[in-house]
Image (cartoon, rainbow, N blue to C red; front, top):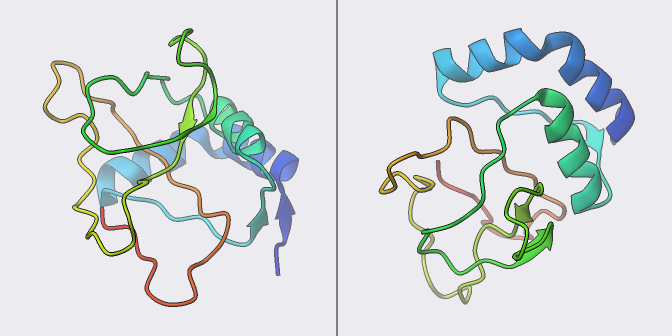
Length: 123
């Protein structure tokens, strides 16, 4: 059961910004659970409060669907699905735009509905 709503998570991210980014750098990933986010817009607002540099998804190979943002205004915050390939296709490790001249410093994932079976996202 969720213990924090998205506004409380925003406040937590604001208060712990440096420690969160330090842990991500030290361990390679940070997982948060036990909070309630109901939409891509709420997730985008949480990420905005964390202060992570926004980057448009340009040059990536994965088939994705835009959930938040605009394809015509790449400076807006974007939230995309992880992968829109059929379930029969394996999802390779995420290396978000590593082949581009300026890959992102951080990537963030949010799961709105857990898969009944499997459902992992490799990092």
